[in-house]
Length: 378
Image 1 (cartoon, rainbow, N blue to C red):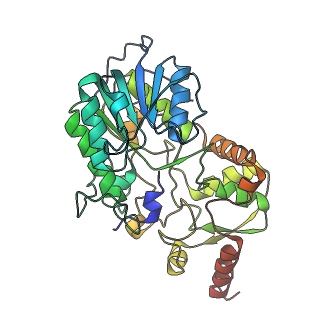
Image 2: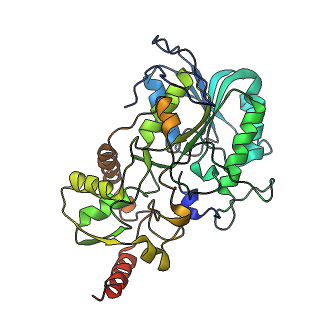
Image 3: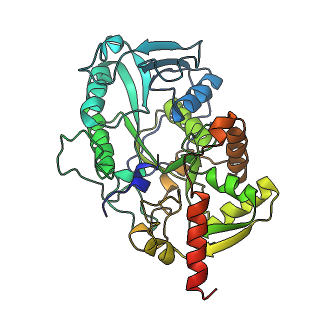
């Protein structure tokens, strides 16, 4: 299946000892001793996952350094060392600020093109112990197999030198996989590849997940995509960030699907969380996935996060997270995630709240509900 825009957008933890490691995983000894303090470099660190990681790492007493262009939210973390440059070694000062610097671990939250990732990985390789690359489940070639694990076939690029996502982001998955390979080649045996699905929670500026509780709170008849049993995988940014700290503390390497919750979750349970958080009793009109596909809500439609639970999308929200769970990934209740994401959105300025960045526009929702009613003879 050609990667779609939906694939492109897929973008409190106990620090317990690792109890089990699967193939492709390596961890430092888990004897229960307090983790030694680490010097950690974050490539990026001012977007969404980056700040969550910095906050979690600071709480554990680690020393952070951020490398970025200094353009996005430069006011964040005034007490953290900041190095300025460009991920692209051919632009301005490039990676010069990183030359000769040594770190215990690197967290690469901002790598999208293999040439650029290769440059940082090769420069840092002599002086770092671990390189954690934040990839994506879009690195897989297909989404049609439920419960697929990290051994599933990965995406490839028709042109290995391409440096555009493509008109429909068809290159995104292949580029992420090529970035993974670049880090693995530069630092063999020292790389941790983390493949998240939908990262949600407070400060998620895509508004993909918060669309649902926001719309539910408005009441009336609401289009609910698919069926209550359709699977749904999300991960709270705070859970992911705190687990990344654990991976650094334990020097855990390998490839991991960072998807949650631990047990399968469904669209029905998501709407139940919306009801619990908002206190509303909105009337849900469940519209089957087949109908939504027929009417344009496939990978390119306006409905965020949800995907049909069949065909080419059958495994999209059913990736195996067993390896990550064995490596210590834990999940807070999705109800907490829903509550906190909604609270964060409501804390934004009025002009921001008036223009959500994802979700069905009211007129499109009404159109689909009317079409569905007609199809039912209503």
